[in-house]
Length: 328
Image (cartoon, rainbow, N blue to C red):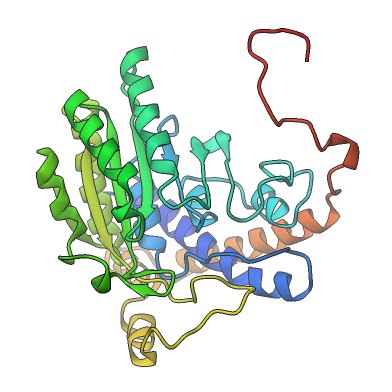
């Protein structure tokens, strides 16, 4: 295992935080505390955390509409995230972003958006800014298999490859774009093979196994820091829940046996916990992490409940930037 003992504990804490945070959301929706729908990353935790553990605190990421897992994977605090989902003024976007538009700058998140593939150009621009400013920062763009057919991805892959930008293009291939099986919209099943068209590395990893994801991402990050340009990583993963929670979603597009197999045999938390025990961590150590995460989630819900809603008079605040200094 390439991660050191403390890093392994932190990786497990982040994976478990995503799982427990997401599991708390349906009850909050049912209670009317979270408006609209949320998109769960349950089942994809190893892909998110494995990638983010290869980054530094000052590196950037962009996420997707499935947006709670990404900031938690990068190390964000749970309380401001929960407050954002509940539309409270103490949220990371002051209650204005909600579930699909979280942007926690404290952990290097440039933005997350309901626009499919919308974060890819932002991450590419961040990589360009690192080159212009002369830093060795990298950016990582998370996107799904559905976004891999967006023109923006191919434009950004080409630009990053030509200019050797420090960008990691990270596809969370969970096999379905909402309810559309990827095999019905992709001429061949391996998105990473598209990297060959831009003369950059394309790597496929088992997205349910954190160590494999981390090793591939770390290699791509180190390559980017050396000035050798971008990489495309495809993590084959799976979401356990429906595309969205809180709205009606059809379930006939996936076989019940398929979902059951992933839950019973390929749960990333179960797999990584077993790896930790194999590496010498003991049950008491892991139980302490599990208890701490449970407390963190409970405290996050209470923090959000006690937080105020934004004042109506503040509706126009933070809507635009006035960097030149002219009177508003």
